[in-house]
Structure formats: structure tokens, C-alpha cells
Length: 460
Ligand code: PLP
Image (cartoon, helix red, strand yellow):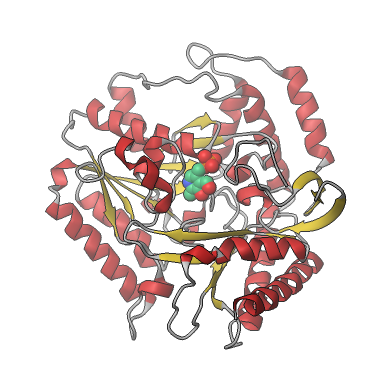
């Protein structure tokens, strides 16, 4: 099929999405065939309420009637104010003080990098410049976001990204399936990574290191490894020790996707007093109906601005866009009033456990690992389950799996991840809508099992 939309597949997508209802969407293939597929990834783990929600129809119609547009400055729009209050009130007490609403996760990370840079200037520490993030990470496709990312996606742009040698440094990725040593517990492995972070900070002069940035649970980079409690706590403590900002990217894993009844993913792993200093969010916030993402600013950064210039350098036309904020707020209110984050936490865990029980024991299939938590899970596909040898990159096994899954009636995200050291891996990421029910979870697991059998056969 040829397409005129300049997107990542450029000219050869496999299908056109026509419409959706709940957790299903209708796709058109080859210009004629209409097919209903169970959407197990909702775009890029965006859809929280599912598709075609009549309440959202009403919310959007009302929001359009009420709409005023005010450029960020003297006038703050009411919807942005209320959405900020909602996020702050539903995060651990005292964690966040202020929010900036943007139009995408990349843009949020871009803004967060600039806010932290300005924070260091406001407090008279211009030498604090360096940013430490992780090998293999993905934080978006703008130049700043790519600079704190790693892997093949940044390679074509590395000459125009922020200096990778002196400013944007990398620490080891958190990847227990591939990086844990034999006999090591996940906590020991996590401690090893925390120690190596400290070494990197010390070797690079702590007075010049500004921040550490990690995804609470990696999504499209490594595929939903669940960190033990000592990992993020260890990073938090290192940040405190060396006066560095602790930033988490929860664009994909946050806003209810992995939390039984709450918003932030890190609440699974960190005590409220260990909250990040700055956090980015996106995706499920607007459930894919509006393009909204955000930067949540903690009291430490907020106070420096308040005592300093009081001015954030960088107002963008669509910052805190009124319509997007109002729709996102109402969507979040619906999700909370119906307990949908708890629902997806429970349903996702049922899905993950069933996939673990049914796919991992078979020595002949290609599923090397099944990992995740709540509404965020991954299958890792390998050539050899004993040695964990990945498939040859040129086979594009992740993408092949997603194509086969579509044929079996389920939409997933299949991709080949990697880092700039040349390692690569094939993953299939699952992030269903929060409204998913148990019979749909069972149907999804059956279809994934069929897909695994088919793809395994084609690779033998
Ligand atoms: N950060 C993470 C962790 C992501 O997974 C993504 C997108 O997948 C982004 C940032 C970028 O968000 P967006 O695609 O909305 O720009």
C-alpha cells in the first residue's frame, strides 16, 4: 500500500485505521478489506479511555464552546490551572509545585532540559552543565531529547545534537534480562548500576554535573523492565549527595498506566520524600484525543525561579493550550471516578502472568522474556532462549511480529531496540486501554499465542 503521509514507515504502511470503539479499531487493508483488531498498544500506549468514547465527544464539544485562547503570560487560563491542580493533588503530597503543559513528550523533555539549565543559572551554578542519562534510552525525537537518548534512532543526527562527549553523558542501561550476572539478584545488579553512576559523577567532577534523567520504566527502548526499589532510590540518593537534579521521564509509563489507582509510576518504587525534582508526562494524559504532555516541576526548582528571575525563558504559542488542558482534565476525572487505573493495573497483570505461564516454558518458541507491570508489558524475542542470542538485525523480527499480529487481529508495537555500542534486541510492547475487560485480555493472549507460533515457524 502506498501512503502520502510522511511518517516513520514513509511510504509503505500495512493498513489504514478507519475508526475505533472501546479497545477495538477498524482497519482497511489493500484498499478494500475492513477488519476489526484488538488494539493492545493504543498508538504508542496513548489510549487510556479507549476509542470512540461518547463522553469524550461531549467533553470536546463543551470545551470548544467554552474555548478562549490566552498566550502564556499575564493571563493564565482556567483549564491549565485546574489540570495543574489535579496533577499536583493526585501526586504524593509536596512532590510537585507547578506544571507546564506542552503538545508532545519530546517537547516536554526539551522544555525540562531548558528548565533545569535555567535553574542552575538562577541559583548561580553555571558550571553545573552535564546531564547523565542511560545507554539505549529513548526520550523523544527533538534534538535535545535525542541528545539524552541513545541508540540507532539518534545516529543520523549525532553531529547536530548536544555534545555527547562533554555534556550529555551516558550511564549503563537497566536491563536485567541481558545484563544481570549469573547468581546476582536484581537488587545486587541495581546496586552495581548505582555504584557505576556514582563513579561516572565523580570522574566527571560533581561540581559540573547538573542532572540525572531516567525513565521510571523504560518503554520503547528496553521494553518495560521493572526496577527493584533500591535502583531509583539509589539514583535519588546520589543526586542528593552531589547536588544534582533527579529527573524522571514518565511520558510512556506514567499518568495511570502503571499505578493501582494513582498517577505516577515512580510511586511503585519510591517513597514520597524521594520524589523526582522534575518529571515529564504525556500520552495517556489526553488519551490520544488531544495532543497534550507536560513538565511537572518540584519545589526545589520552583523556589529557585521564584527567588531568581521569576521568568521561564521560552514561552511557546501552544504551551498550556486551553482546549487541550480542559479535555485532558475531564478525561482524567473520568478515569479516576471510574477507577480505571486500578482496572488496567489488574487486567495488565492478568495478561502478563498468562503470557509468562504459557509462552516462557516452551523451549521451541522465540519468546525469551515476558516482563512488565500493570498496563505495560513486553515480550522479548530471541533466536536462542538459552543463550539469549538476538535475531539478526536485518530480519526486523519485532516489526515482523507486529505485522503478523495484525493478521491475527491484534495491534502491537514491535521494534528492534539498540544502543550506540551496537547491541540490539527485538521487543513487542503492549499498552492496552485502561477500560480493557478480562474477556478481551483472554482474547488478546490467545491471539498473541497464535502469532508467536506463526512467527516462530517462519524463523525456523
Ligand atoms: N519519552 C518517552 C519515554 C517516550 O516513550 C516517548 C515516546 O514514545 C517520548 C518521550 C516522546 O514523546 P512524543 O512522541 O509524544 O514526542
